[in-house]
Image (cartoon, rainbow, N blue to C red; front, side):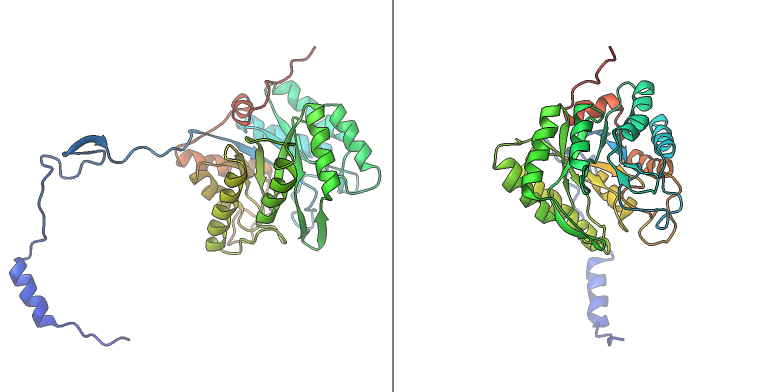
Length: 340
């Protein structure tokens, strides 16, 4: 313990001299503290923050990564994926992101499975926007991706400007595929979504997609750190520092960017909370994490649970979950196609 070196006699003299009174000159009376104005000028002094009321909260129902070994509750079948998406939409979700799985539980680009999930949802929710990953990792999937794009199943399709060891797997998008996939998405009438896992991915997007003129400012960006091999977020300081750097780099490349931050990995709902506080949009759900909280082992029971947690947080922050129609407006998408 540090030795106490206070000169208590001098303290006593000071207390006597001050007669126990703080220094206080209330020049602004009759107000003690006016939180909005000064008595000495007519301008405001604490304006409202520039944060939009509406926030996109998009459930990501299931991805290509997690099996039921990682989370026994992971939705795998077409019916499970569709019903978990529907449950979130009934609770007010802004949009849906999804993959579909094959009979063994692995990612597939099956047009029929995508349509089996998406078409009933569009029928029930006419303004709905659905995006999802057409990741072409296996032989024949490039042609299947083109078939899905031509069928106009999805409103948006991510382009992964990345090369990372995601878990124990190398996940890299060769530059020719990156450029050609972006072109095919644009030609199909869908919207490319720039999917970034590390801050280096922002530089890749800048070098190949923006400086080439293929894309201009105002794109949708998906930030997905926190998974093994992605920008590390192993504690709160890393999470906040990393998110601030990540989003700042995106703004340098695309000042009008619409940024969607995924509640990914261990950071999970804490990351979404910080993103919502910063005025960004968020993606939550069982594609991006298996955990409810960073500091506990408890697993998500459903996408609806993840969405409800996020909805409570954004409402506590004074923001309102955007509707599907508002999602289209915010993200710059065309109105939903009416059925002929």
